[in-house]
Length: 317
Image 1 (cartoon, rainbow, N blue to C red):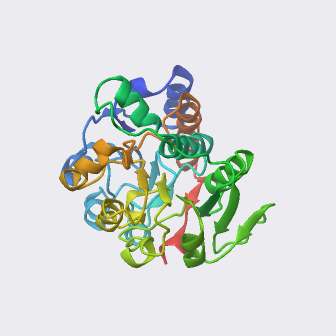
Image 2 (tube, rainbow, N blue to C red):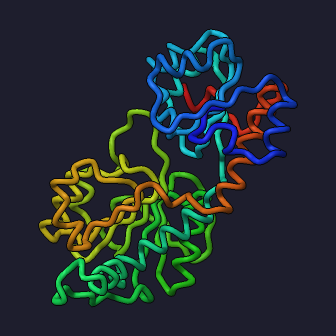
């Protein structure tokens, strides 16, 4: 198991379950491992449990460098866009993930970002602390009566839709899958973007895929619209959304990550029209507890030859 704090990551019951399933080695990795370092740590191992912090990218070169003994990998993540699934399948390595350990936390974080942008909570705090001039406007707008467009109506998106409805919002949804949700108006992606006040992204992405919200699609947004992205940063063309906010063709953008070009975004961050939360949407005590339990379950299941929560060959084809 490769984690930021090694064995201390787990409670005694979890350690006992792992050790009961086979010879278990715990490794501490406070920064991203190189492919060579990862291969060295896993020398002779049949299974690996890794976190995205330690192994932020399982690309073909990283997978190709893994010892031939490795037959299963359990990742502490729901999304597997950092994994080259085709390369995993070619190597015959079974990949297990966490299908839903932080859905409630991410949905609540999404609403938190919505209220932050709508009610200028971050600027109110900054003004009170003297970080921005007293003249900074903190005038916001009510979410009740506004329209919310949810892109992706899976576990998290459906929760966001329900929370939006509870706040009095009209909810529109876009998803190629058939999710039957009461009072959610289904429409195409382009139609959703052109008609809603708030866009919330909860769509999956794949290894190496381009953005879903391209420059052309961002151009469909209304000038008063805000975009909230608690899914994956790469779903949105960062340069295009930052430019759109700067030119006031979009009112604001909140992302649960760090912007890649901080210099280009610096003024907008100071003005509060861009908001970053550094990939913390999942980070609650409840999600951490459930995630670790499920992660341990996945490793034990791999060890016993009965894998669970597998991202299978169909996804890699």
